Amino acid sequence: MSDPQPPQRPDLSELRIDRDADGGGGGRRALLIAAMILVAAAAVVVFLIARTRPAEVTVAAARAPSSPGETTILNASGYITPRRRATVAAKITGRVTEVLVDEGMPVHAGQVLARLDDSDAQRRLAAVRADRDVARASLAELHVALADAERTLQRTRDLREQGVVGQQELDTATTAVESIEAQIEVAKRNVDAAEAQVAVAEQDLENYTIRAPFDGIAVSKDAQPGEMVSPISAGGGFTRTGISTIVDMASLEVEVDVNESFIAKVTPGQRVESVLDAYPDWRIPSSVRTIIPTADRQKATVKVRISFDALDPRILPDMGVKVSFLDEQPQTAREETPAARALVPAAAVRTIDGRPVVFVVTGDRVERRAVTLGRTVGSDVEVAAGITPGERVVVNGPADLEDGQQVRVNG
Image 1 (tube, helix red, strand yellow):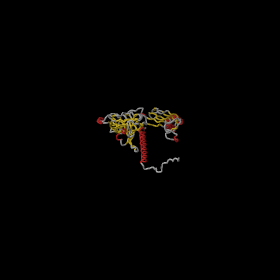
Image 2: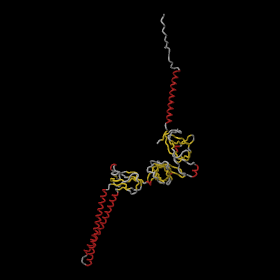
Image 3: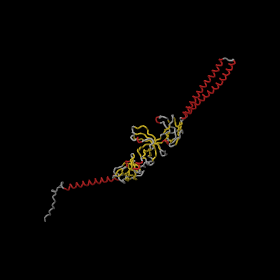
Image 4: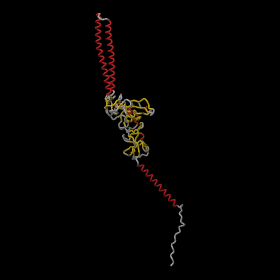
């Protein structure tokens, strides 16, 4: 029996990989398509994340329109300032022994605010009073001497008429009287000088008492007992220059800077509506008191002062305030335009599909509303329908803002 033949192995030497065949190109295209799909998916994810992120916006509150028959021709902003404000200081340098005023305390003209150490002034006053008393005593002594000299002169005259004494004795007696009279005049002047010195010392003593110059409210307390005060800065910054700052609350007014290009629209007595930043819904009737007749060359503005028709305890110095200068509107113009319900910044109005709209912020989202516009008043525009005063409207935000989009308010 013969041995079995071993199986023949296939000959692989003829096998080759054809890299130019269609299979290799198809693989590359598949990888490219997969990469494009991944990029598109990433773009969609980024887009969705961006859409869900709150849009940052700046808002402003819609305001109530001006009174009927009046229109705003100019807007400006400024601060509440008093016409009378004084930082009360001492006329002399001294150490504070007592402070009788505190922040927020009402004061009256002449009321004592503080006292300084006046021990030295008391001693000087006592010394000059003693000198005055000496001068008065000397004057009294001279009056006694004058009375005696006048009696002597009368006796000498009588004796001269009788021929007992000569003319020389009479002349001597007359000279004695005239001399004492002259000394009395000098003594009187000395008494007057002593009285003047006493008045000066008393005024010096009064200078150690600091009093309120007018009725008002103390808005600051700048010194404490034990500190040195002086009318000028001294002592390397360790000496106070004021005791307290007093504000006359009856003199509060608005001070605004008006661009010199628009100052022609402002006249004394012109009606104004003032709105405090602290009370944006409170419109305060006011009027132009004066236009300061000079311009600021750095800011190209003119300062205007506005008086309130009636003061209110809520009005405080240095509060921020916005003012609207009003102008009487003709009756025909009022009839041609719809009645305004609110006033919004012109930047809040957008045009979408040919219609004016505004975006109102409600909670953390915006609501698109169609509005009916009226007149343009300065940088604002009147809204006849669609908005009510107090609602917040977007004045600065993304151009692609949509109804119901989540937003975050800046500031």
